[in-house]
Length: 411
Image 1 (cartoon, helix red, strand yellow):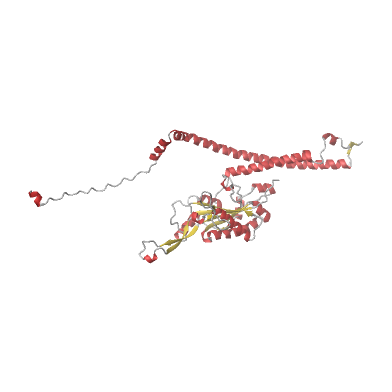
Image 2 (tube, rainbow, N blue to C red):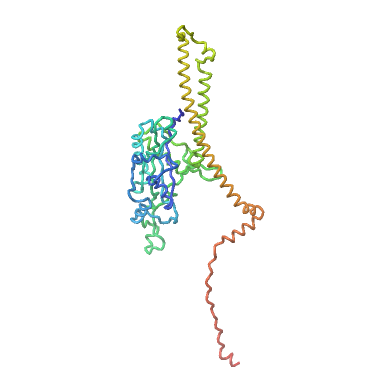
């Protein structure tokens, strides 16, 4: 059996999306796809997913449009393709829920986590909040010997900050200039998740060697607030997610290879330990000759053995059966993991092949850059130079000659 780490970590992470990109996570979160080929989603359990905030029949974009049309939020000052949605994923490792009551406990935990999200975003700005209970955790399933599901929650919200609009100098009433004209709920991911200055023991800002102030990332502060909220609500036996963890920065493929390779190494080590245990370490070990010499054949053809030899043979038989079963299971797991790692490595090889093709395609440009960097730079500068607008010619101003005075004419 695979040994599972007993350390439970809480996680709260945020990723922004624009209106064009949010559809993909909507289909996943709301289970709008017909199939999930690359995921361990059991659609038969999808009805067990719990919505703490249900978007209803409207899409995420439709809900945002309604909020804009009714003036609840504003995109004033945003670029056309700005990030206007935030997805917060709240999570804790599977074993935590399996040890504390499974599905029912997970519902209680994420009901409280939703209350935390309400504090962060405001309930009126949350579009959807759903706990997934239909994603199978293969490692834990193998560990326990029955289906184990990974409970986690997806929250999609609009990142809103309060912004005061002031009267400008163009206001006719000069007494109003600089005062508050109106207050809007502005959509802004960057302002919602601003980093904070790091303070020392005296409360003074910490300055880095380059002279800039040291900042605490906004998501690190979010992790702190989430852990404190859940702990205060009475949920224990877990710790805050690791600071500076790079797990989320690994590509999905690399991370799968890393975890499967770790499990493969553990299995191989376990196979070796079991083989050594039953071949050498067992206190009941005997040579074949010693086993063959046990017992005496009687007149009736039956063998009789001493009580001590009988106990020894019985123990050896039990250990043999037990060891065969364990080693067989471990070797099967070893084979499955080897095949998975080989499959993932083959995907990397295909990606590397595509990269080589891309490098070959770009090689002439790279060679030109090495030999004639200035000429290549000038070429692309001229090639990509924006077209200049033709200035309208100003009408020529004709200057009439001055009329000569009568006296000058007479002269």
